[in-house]
Amino acid sequence: MDIQEIIVVEGKDDTTAIKRAVNADTIETNGSAISEETLRRIAHAQEKRGVIVFTDPDYPGRRIRAIIEQHVPGVKHAFLAKEKTIAKNGKGLGIEHASDNDIREALKNVYTPNTNATYESEITMDDLILARLIGHPQAKNRRKQLGEILNIGMTNGKQLHKRLAMFQITAKQFGKAVALINQEEHNE
Image (cartoon, rainbow, N blue to C red; front, side, top):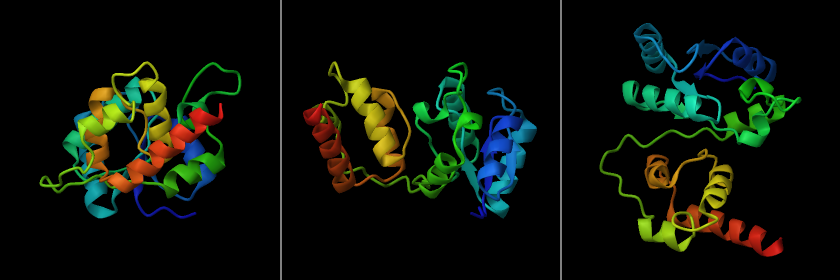
């Protein structure tokens, strides 16, 4: 699998895992304190070939993603569920622990966020409440499942509405994903 875009990862081990799974170039942020120079390199990469941000599914990874999104609009995003990034010994979490197949799958499901400021999401906050994604005892677990089904990553309740709009998730896609979550719950 050849990837045209340059993939932004957190460190050397992530680069090793990416290169093992696909043919791609990477830029390493070396942690969540991204330097101005690294942001300039990412912006240049975005202009030349496009960028896919592929960070760990944890707080520092989400922070890096947000900083890049703020400084380099229009980057694409790849997400992996937390369970797919846990080290074999259970100590540690990161893209470097994911299987080659999971990495390829995440890169197949890359999202380009909406840069059209006038895009109005079809999904309302009321829809999120009705779908038991906010304000419900199982909301966190249901958001996690939704993020996996739609390949948009895990979010808190506040960020979910923004993330759905950013990736232009339609009411139909949202409805199908919620139906899947409800079906899984019913089968338990």
